[in-house]
Image 1 (cartoon, each protein chain N blue to C red):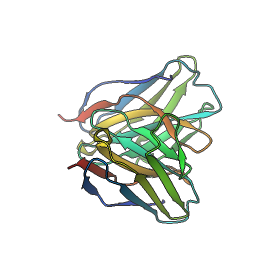
Image 2: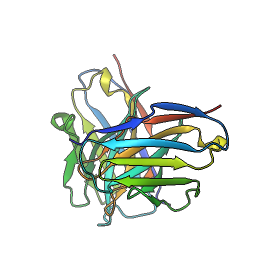
Image 3: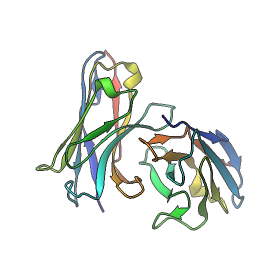
Image 4: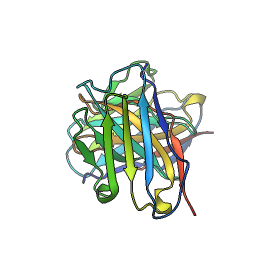
Amino acid sequence: QVPLQESGPGLVKPSQTLSLTCTVSGGSIRSSNYYWSWIRQPAGKGLEWIGRVYPSGSTNYSPSLNSRLTISIDTSKNQFSLILTSVTAADTAVYYCAREDTGWNTFDYWGQGTLVTVSS
Amino acid sequence: DIQMTQSPSSLSASVGDRVTITCRASQNIYTYLSWYQHKPGKAPKLLIYAASSLQSGVPSRFSGSGSETDFTLTISSLQPEDLATYYCKQTYSTPSFGPGTKVDIK
């Protein structure tokens, strides 16, 4: 088992910054066999891939979020993080972190998800 | 960007029915296609990868097929616990999900 757990504020004000951390237990985040991704689901909508970070620190981002997004990795803490700036109500969603295997790029382990609401 | 579509958007079927969900990619993605099951309040679960390979631990009533732009997920005999939304996802380029198919039990 490779439990993943999201953490961070559940409420963020409009125009401010959303910050989440995913803690990985039971396996090393340094493994070259995996990437580490963020996915979100707005209420009543489908899943949206946000971006990924490699153990090296390299990243790929969704084009629609690229200008506001930073994903980073801290291998010493076995954690990776998401920062989304200038949030609006459209960023209200359940945010999931997930492990992505480098073979077929499947998300084989997920966190339970954390609801982030953007509201004043 | 590669766009994914799914049909139907929702369906209702009886226990024991055969259920088929279709996914289409906007360009050739070879077999870089996976399927996920998402139940309310839970994390999504990987069912199928590489278009037709069954993830370990997933019941054999689930199967996938297809290549290039057209793919299907089949549940051979629908069970009550299959109530969920099903998503296809391509990883030929940066990942993108289909809009989902909600499966209800009659």
